[in-house]
Image (tube, rainbow, N blue to C red; front, side, top):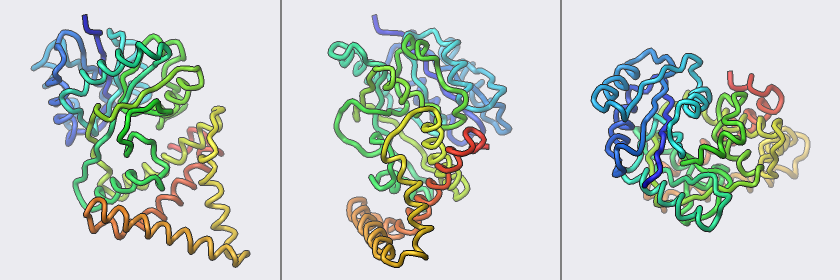
Length: 323
């Protein structure tokens, strides 16, 4: 018999996206009696709750509306762990939607890899970025570049064991064993969760055939906030005892910029940095056949600076950096 899976979806003011998300989830090519969809509404002020309840009425026993009075998604994840009936669970975003074979391929991949790797804790797949305007298109391109420092699930094309995965299917027993999700991580909680899985000796696997679609941030405010938090998460991770040498790049980048007025030879390095940015813009423009890529350089520069500032804030102020 196929394993029972609990799908956990936090949502807050997602009326524009939640309907598409749920439409794809209720139409998965996986037996309806072998999964459940738990949607945690963070006390939305738009029509999000109304849409979720509509699906709950149309699909009784499959879709379940849940209130999340603490609003943040990390609380929804832990509530989901407590409420879930499944031996496996998925955490998913309301700002995205899965392919209709997403659940089946996630389960098949998990069961197949588990045979040869008993320490397997979860599997994740490829995220295909969607854009609604010019800015969202550029943001999507940024995350498709290795210069963004983004995780491999944004651009990798080959199956592999990975340090982090997104929208992943996890073994519930292992999740409970390691203590669930860290509620200090008001954002980036899935990232820290994956790091803790690795730290405990468990493995994660990436399969690009497991596909979901994510709407890239389409406003400057959303993009700037997300980028700052992206850096703050790495700073918080260091406070929590995790470490990766590339995470120190933001601190070095800020130090480099501050030193520029005092050490003129560094200007050549700064010039070289911009040559790399322009070269990457041209590469992505040719690869994507998208002229918008040619303006990527200054936006990537802003991206690097915001990540750096976020990293320092996360390192100094912990979870207060997210507020």
